[in-house]
Length: 127
Image (cartoon, rainbow, N blue to C red; front, side):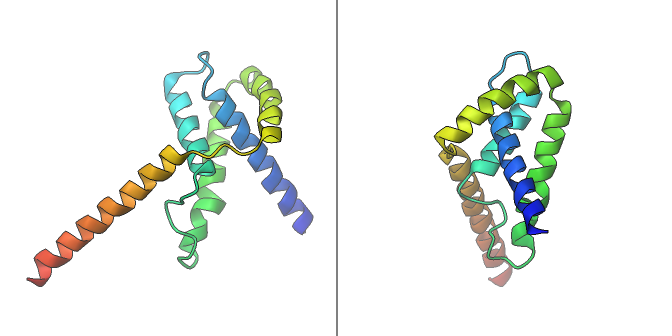
C-alpha cells in the first residue's frame, strides 16, 4: 500500500517539474502559464498557505490543493507540449528542487497582512 503512495508522490513531484519547465514556453497561453507558475511556485515554496502544524487543515493544501492544481494544469496543457517538457523535467529533477523564495515571501507577507488586519479588528472591538 505504501509503495503505491510513494510512487504517486514521486510522479506528482515529477509533474511539478513539468509545470515548472512548461510555464516558460511561449506556445502556452499567458493565463495557463501564470496558473502553472503559481502551482509550481506553491509546490516548491518553503512556506505553506496553511501551516502543517494546524491539525487536519495543515495537510489539506498538500493532499488536495497541490495535486488538484497539477491535474488541472496538465489537463489544460497541450499533450505535445507536455511530452516535450517531461524530458526537460527529468533534467531539472536531477539538478535538484528549485526553491521559490519569492512565493515564500509573498505567503509570509500574506500572513503578516492577515495578522495586522486581525489585530486591528480585535483592537477596534475591544476598545
